[in-house]
Length: 468
Image (cartoon, rainbow, N blue to C red):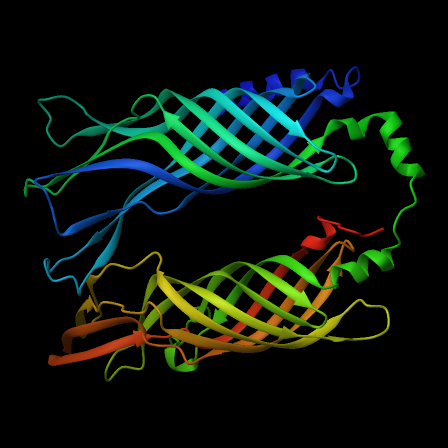
């Protein structure tokens, strides 16, 4: 796949070398977004206690375009696409109360295509339709027996599976003042053959799982297009002659009323009661948020999609120690209210309170539902309880500060406290300590002190309507 990508880049550079002769013929797009893959699974024998679930994956890539006619472009696309498959297992089927999630596989695919784009252009926006023909490349590691006379002896070999595909995408473009553009679109890719088969078996039990896929997916994506016409001398001079907005006007617009996008990441410091003794960083977990907000004067309301990682810190009876079960995560929808106050007279800093209600919508990556651990004088096995967290809420209260960056967007910092969390990651434990039997329950929480940093992009800077 790497060689194909290098060839693709050289091809794009060959076209780009003609920029000096025909600047207005070329553009370059960067895109990415969530995707839903289409995989097929076969269980032998049938396993009604297993529910197949294909999670949302993602893709990102580049698209080099050269104009053939006024409304027709030739497209060269290179794309990275993620594909994975999960199952929901019900160990007590037909009782559905107890369940756990298992990821069967995850792989990275390369998609390369050539297509034609037809454009319907308006003054400030445009629509397009683009069919393409291409290939999907999967580099994988194959385990091969040495020979039939040496059972149990294998060697690994890197292989590549290449199959053809068809792609169709439709999109909307919104132009900036320099004829660069933001785009949003919908794409479907259909693989025309099967990729390398995947199979899993459970030792001598006779149970097996076959997974078939062809790289097919449907994706909603966003992107940004660069018009190389801006690099011509005449265009550069034209933009220089235009009266530029002052920094103060741009800065004021970043805090004006309107919608905005926000992306943030955070660290959560678990309460002291959940920390592992003498292990400084055991109490720190992370998370992220992607959302949309609306500002009205000094009041803002936000919502979106958040992921919290957390852990269950299990106290060992009669020992001043804890054992931490990691690799938990859950998803939540935040509803946030903010109110800010201007600090100083240059519109460079705003500070205010923030309050959020998080509504839990489901689990993300989960830990093993059954397991064990021990030490020199203790030994435990654990079984996870069904979460039942969907619809439950917890809260966050804090203070945040916002500063303009590049005079076109905002960066914000927030210190806050989570509280009111339900029990998460609850497990039932049985075992012995110093030879005495013990039986108890342990759980974690989403409470704790949080440090958060985010980036905010006001949409009124992109969609300037009625502004001079």
